Image (cartoon, rainbow, N blue to C red; front, side):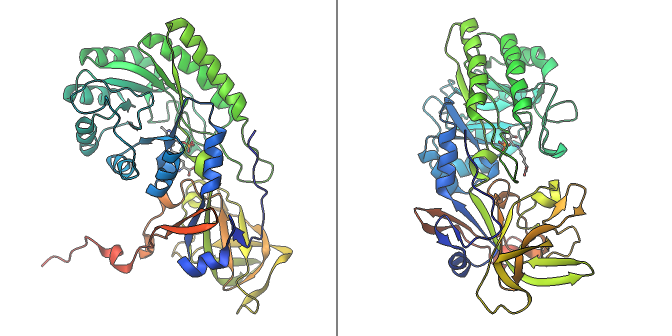
Length: 441
Ligand code: LLP
């Protein structure tokens, strides 16, 4: 069973690289990823036939290249993600070339999976012959009209879902995702009309869920596969595997999870009398722990009874707390002795309950908040202006959801491999911020 790194409130290095050196070299705020942690998480899932990385979690092409070199394939939810996958060295597999008509989801390096096609992605999927996982009946018709005779898979909404937040629950009738399980017959008829073969079933009920809910998916998927019948050669368990964000949380037992799916797969193999490829589609699980957002403390403010550490990173850099009330572990790294203001820094001394916020002109710009926007406190070491605050386990849905709000540039991204830190995305410049803007004549 995977084990979690211990949670710490003070830290001086990340994967062997001193935090101060990283901040000096790349500036702050900066996202730093530990490559070894990603590889470790990939290896945890080796029992599955195919690990299909949900690149939306962290789609820098260096991260895609890293997982690609460790045998992981990808999904793409947009033309932009297809573009990234190609730039990272993923290939449109043989048999997927235009005109061959024999696209197969199982083991294809890139699969387009979404609930709609925008016009750009439909054009691209048709042109490249990419396999498609259809999340709505309309997608079947739209693809079928342009590219009859292909193989497709269907993402089914089994009528239930679960996530770490209501906003990440992707099943049930409150969710827009997937093909409603009772419409499967209709979708098979649509596929038939266009000569599309349904070769796989996929379910993803939510992000950051738990083993109990994930386990229920196997049964639902098996039922759907039986309705489709012998054309099914691939089943996908979707993503959703949670990771521990706080003390007391643990990884799910991935071995037990695999066993559940393997048993379902074997029952289908016996029923259909052919092999079934078993895919898993994790995002968070592979990258969350690897990522750190290093920010500098720029003010230590006393507001009545509350001490605020104000950082140079806000929800423009990491949106999860304001969006979901998400909890991220945090640690402090002292800059140097003799810092200029605030509590005297003493990372090893007693902890203080503080509020951690960012620079943005919004009261919601608080990293220590609970769902609903309630401000919470965090026990952290005393710190002063110039010290670093590190927001941990920020690799998944961190950089990718950052924005230019308040005209702040997107932070750089850095990958540490074998103790060496390398820039994998430069900090945006002031010119990047206004690129494409025009003052009319
Ligand atoms: N497959 C599909 C079809 C998905 O929609 C997702 C995530 C995944 C796989 C990967 O799920 P994961 O293994 O990462 O749980 N921004 C939110 C999470 C949104 C998830 C969107 N879909 C957050 O920060 O928690």
